[in-house]
Image (cartoon, rainbow, N blue to C red; front, side, top):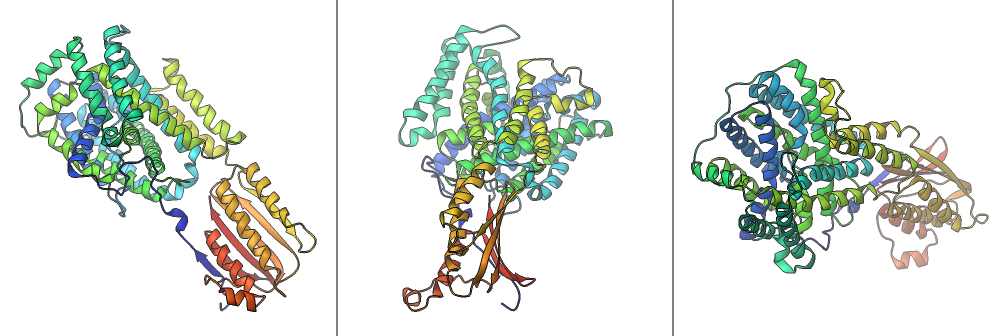
Length: 582
């Protein structure tokens, strides 16, 4: 080996295996007609994002014409970003179907900017937010310690909680503080039931379209029971069939005082995207273990382009839309091919005001039922991500404190009313509060997180079971994944088996095991002959004829158990280092 350590890396542990429950996985291509229907279904869900546009523009005193134009420009940016998001094997895009639309992260910052500088300030600062997100996406893979499963899982859970605040008032018929409304609740309950039924009991392709089934049923019931928004239907009928979208106001403006609010909104949107894309990875891989930050980085860049383009055209900030991820999970259709019809439909609707208006007249009880439906999947999926690791005391506080104070935003209205206005985006929603707290506490509690233990073993003196007991005890105490501990145990056992070969080891050996949540490393030190690494499988004849051939067999197996192995001599002592990704 010419004095250089031999290093071997394998990638078999990173191969995704399609979960049994998926009908169309990320790499599958549904028939064209099915893709269009699924894309249409997702567009209906994305109309919830249009509410954000209406809230922002009307809050700052915008006209109905301005609302329509800001909405149409945002739709174009959403459609393009959704298609870019699905690009695979590219620095741009995550390779997953994770639609992008106007989200709640930018409501507070955009409202403050709009009241101060008008729509032009929202457009200009949204462009800067897109640039900031793009720069952040390039360094994201180096920030992996910021996003362990308990952090991303909590973000996904809190996204589901935020859907509750949007969905349940509509479900129960609360309007202008009055409610609940019995008729509206009945429509919402029937809509929800007709979505749950095909999901739980449906067979075959019917399980792909629960939202469309519920939507049609809900709209018909709303019409029969008189809770369909008649005025909004008349407004939709009056809209032209085709027109070119245009900016609501000319130009862009920038206010340095408002920049921190948008950068904070960008950070909240970024962390939300990490949670959404982590969930996309998890639901598409039956053997998911950790977030692929390279994929997330590409997805963030697609979202950054969406936000920057939206500001350039005259729309509002964009982010991944969690409701659609929940819908993909519910229907078992996560194919990235669905992104094309979904994105194209969004763009086309921006040029067809009449059709776009019909999408936006969905009765509130029906919209509430849809939001409750997808929130169920988001909350439970987030909890599953959190509990994919054993929750020791440190993780309990990392998750528990942000959860408590995040929920307090919605449970105790006005709790953070006294916070200075420039810090309001930090406490504007349960998602913002819990996200910032979970990241901060994760960094704080990482102090002392690295664990180290040394095992001393002497052949003929120590029981071979000593290795198994040591690794099981340490792995449980550290909260390590069981499959990683089992592979590490097997690799260390194989090395000990090889030390029975004459002359390889003289005296006791010391195995230093180090664990830091993301890596498990075993450094074996001993006196004797350097361990020869080989990826060639020894033949049965060689094993029978040569007693030292057991070293080759052990080497072959160790290289397949570990993610990386090196063997070298340092200062007269032999070292074998085994690395396992966690």
